[in-house]
Length: 575
Ligand SMILES: *[C@@H]1O[C@H](CO)[C@@H](O)[C@H](O)[C@H]1NC(C)=O
Ligand SMILES: *[C@@H]1O[C@H](CO)[C@@H](O)[C@H](O)[C@H]1NC(C)=O
Ligand SMILES: *[C@@H]1O[C@H](CO)[C@@H](O)[C@H](O)[C@H]1NC(C)=O
Ligand SMILES: *[C@@H]1O[C@H](CO)[C@@H](O)[C@H](O)[C@H]1NC(C)=O
Ligand SMILES: *[C@@H]1O[C@H](CO)[C@@H](O)[C@H](O)[C@H]1NC(C)=O
Ligand SMILES: *[C@@H]1O[C@H](CO)[C@@H](O)[C@H](O)[C@H]1NC(C)=O
Ligand SMILES: *[C@@H]1O[C@H](CO)[C@@H](O)[C@H](O)[C@H]1NC(C)=O
Image (cartoon, rainbow, N blue to C red; front, side, top):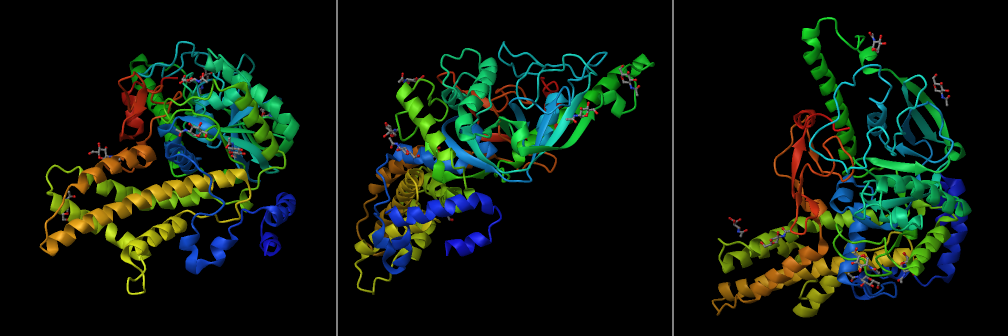
């Protein structure tokens, strides 16, 4: 069965090694989904499984959200501090973009962006203009004091230090799959000391970084050096769009386009200074708008990938995280891993080296993100409806019970066996819950690694928490409406506990990246913008954020619609 289905897969050479791996795994590994599939009629009762590891609600939820947020721009910004490492794969044929000052293929490690708009903003206005640069830096977002425009390490290079004074846009094509990449979750390319860069500093074995801008390059060098022993191709991060550090451009990439970018005035076929000086302000405004549109294009390219950058594939069967190794905190704005013990540091580096050595194979492992997405899409409105109903000041308790019955009955009924079939109502509901959990959280391929088992256990736990809450809401409400319609005394008191349980569940789930949205529908020339934490056309971490009681900046739950005019209104692009 495996061989047959493998025949049809495109990337045979990479699969060949895995055939052996999987066959061996099936023979020796007790973790197989077999009994789950084979006993369909009773699988509701087989829910326990030797596969499920004990895990706390908080850790299960954090791992669930890491899987759900992987390669999604919005999630990465709303949960800015990542503490995990997700082995990734960039297929053959994918285009990667790099802007630089000399048009040469980088000799050492360098940055590439997944979107050319992203690379372009780094080099568009960096040519050595003889004359004043239109659209001066400014704007409300204050970069940290060590920030030097034009000196930025990122998908763009430092500004050209001489030569022709023109920058270049290079397009690379992946010639051979980049099968040993690591995705760093969270807002991992924000140049901060608040935790967003922790995974890089950990992999690089660096501590006490006082300047993330310079620490960043050193970290990349050290990570690529560390990766040589197992063939690391690079690592993937997000600023506003996804980008990657490529350790060796000559290994698996080929250059397919090399554009020397002209000065903006040349592109418009106009001199840098007009002879009629009265037109100069108007002329500068035109360049400001072009520059704002450039920033908007970059924002838009990132925003498109709120739903997922589908060009990168993930192999969750090799997932590694600090979450199951030590306490790192539960708030994705304050959790940290920079100071874990050297044992933990070495442990995760060794585990990554071990799992990456044979290469990733995203085609042969469960895509757990499909599962988390279905769960979030299904249950986020139901949980919020219940929560909102319970906390309503206007509704009577009876109304609340009726409404919750409306929101939950179909979900319960679909899983509950006909009570005429010799099943007591209570055990029927217990069985229904088990079945519901299994149907929402199940592996698609054999659970063949400790990582799969960890993720499966997390998804299972989270789904169990949700299903329990939905069923509890149903039974509490049902008892109330039973009493009402049967003219018995009604006890409304269980609604209170239900409410606090629901608030507690939502706090544990932390589905902010689903709940945060634009309250109005954005116009066709706008995007619903999730602020990012690094430099951006709208400044550095200020627009659309607020400061909490501890002085920590967080994203406002009400996201804003943004157009190029918003950028103009903020004084143009700040860099
Ligand atoms: C890209 O084009 C420029 C300008 O023609 C040239 O100097 C440079 O060598 C080219 N780069 C490569 C890698 O061919
Ligand atoms: C654009 O500006 C540069 C620098 O001043 C100048 O050399 C060039 O001739 C200008 N282009 C046009 C079309 O006038
Ligand atoms: C997560 O699991 C680790 C390892 O078992 C544990 O040390 C930590 O306290 C757990 N964190 C939470 C928030 O439950
Ligand atoms: C690491 O730092 C965090 C916050 O910066 C702190 O809460 C935690 O106790 C520290 N852990 C260790 C092992 O020092
Ligand atoms: C309950 O449902 C009714 C009818 O759909 C609706 O008018 C009312 O606003 C709902 N109450 C709450 C608290 O959701
Ligand atoms: C749940 O209800 C509480 C109380 O009204 C509210 O503060 C909280 O924001 C709600 N949670 C969500 C996710 O809507
Ligand atoms: C944590 O999970 C990884 C798989 O991601 C596993 O290899 C490791 O043994 C686990 N560690 C602990 C302490 O549970």
